[in-house]
Image (cartoon, rainbow, N blue to C red):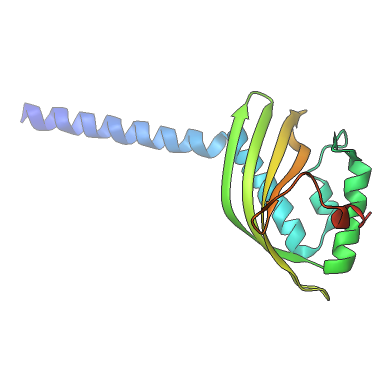
Length: 161
């Protein structure tokens, strides 16, 4: 009888710990989860052809490979005018968060739905920085496209601006 009582106490304590853990998990969102949500919002904007929604994830202080935030905005606007909304499937995603900086390696398959239908598999490296409790992209680097290694954005993409 005493053993059953102890087992019931242990079981009740375990259930309480599990419930508390679930509640804490619901209330506290990790930085990695926030980056995943921002990435999901970015791809939702791409799927809708929403350049402003996509650019909301890019830091206004962006500058890499000779491109500023304004340059990227022009490229994104030109892309959507030419190709329209794009359906994106994430093939692989790896995120490493260290304090206020994060790195994401992501592989995607994208299909455009506009007048010029295209599809491509590509790998990207995104650098993120936490600015005022919000994660924003500070660097975008194209690693490969359709199996070809890339050294930055190809000239045809740069010409979209």
